Image (cartoon, rainbow, N blue to C red; front, side, top):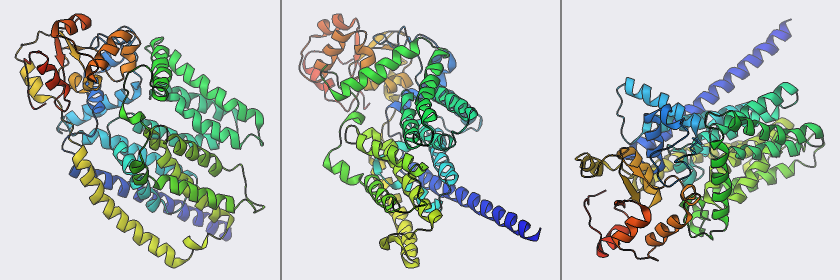
Length: 508
C-alpha cells in the first residue's frame, strides 16, 4: 500500500512538474513575441491582414454569403466562398471583445494577432508535452527564433498561423489512431480543417506520414487514414454554408494557383511567397534544415538497438519535417511548416534517447555541455529580441489608406463606383479603408484570371510596362472610370506621364 502510494505520488509530482514546465515554456515564448510586436510594429507586416480585419468587422452576413459584391472581375463576384471561415468567425469574436474592453481598433492589430500566435505556441507546447518531450522551455524558445522568416510569419495576422496550429495538433490525434472511434475523430478534424484554411489538404502530409510508419503494423488502418481524411475534407466542403462554391474556389486556389506557381506561363505574377529562395535567404533561414539533418543522424544512431521502434511517432514527424524542408526550395512559404516540425522532431528524438537510455553523441552529452546550452539559449533569446525587433521595425510599416479614405468621403467618387485597382494586391487595404467602392481583383489574381483572362493579362502587361494604353482605351477595356495605384509603385508616375489625370495624389 505504501509503495503504491509512493508510486502514485511520484507520478503526480512528475505530471505536475511537466504541466508547470509547459506553462512556463508557453508564457516565456509568448512574452518574447509580445515584446517584439509592441516594440517593432507601428502598423502591420502584411497587406492581407487588412482584408481579414475588414471581413471580421463586416461580419458573417458578408463572409458567409455566396456573392461578393466588392469585386467586379473575380470568380468571387457570383461564386464566393470564404476559404477561412472559422478564422474570420474567431476574428469577429476577438474584435467584439476588443471593442468591449475599449482597446484601440486600428493597426497595429496586436490583440488579435497575438491570440493566434499564442494558439500556435500552445499547440506546439501541448504536442511536445503529449510526446513526453523534456526541456520544453529551450525547445519552445528555439521554435520562435529558429528562422527570421518563420518569426515574421507567425506574427502576421493571417490564417496560415491557424493552419500551422492545426497541423501540430493533428500529431497527437494521429499517434493514437488504434480504434474506430479515433478514426471518427480524424474525420471530424479533417472536416473542421476544411472550414479553417484555404489549403485543407495540407493535413494529408502528417496523415500520410503517420500512415506510412504504421503500415507494417496495421496495413488496413494505414490505408484507411488518408481516405478518411479526404472524406472529412470533402464532407466539410459539402456541408458548408457556401457549397458548391467551396469546390470552385478550392480548384482555383489549390490547382490553378499551384500550376501557375510551378510553371508561370500565363504572364500573371503571383505573390512573392511562392518564389524559390535565394542563397542569402537560405543562409539566414538554414537552422531548421540543420536541426532536421542532425535529428535524423541521431535517430539513425538508434537504429542498431533492439528496443528501437522504426515505426515510432518520431519517424512520422521526421518525415513531415523532411518534406516541408524540401518544399522550401520550391516556395519559401513552406518554412511555415518546416520550422515547427523540425524543432518538434528534434525534441522527439531527444525524448527517444532518454526513453531508451541511449547515450547521446559526445558533442551534446555531459553536464557542462547542458549548462552551456542553457547559457547559449539565453544569449540567443536576447540577441533574437534585438535583431528581430530591428528587422521587423523596418518591415512592419504597411499602413492603411487613411488619407485616401478621408479624401474619398468628400464624394469626389460616387459610392459603389468601380475603381480599377491595377495592382491586385492593393485590394485588402482598399477594402479596409474604402469599402464603399467596388474593385476589380483581390487576394489572388487567378480568381480574376479564371473569369476574365484577357482583361487580367491587359492589366499585368500595363503594370509591367509591356503595354501602353490611353485613359480612354483602359477605361473601355476595364469598364471603369477610375484607376488606383498605391504610392510605393512607379506605375502611377508612368501613367501620369502617359496623360492620365490624377484626381487624388497623397502619401498613400
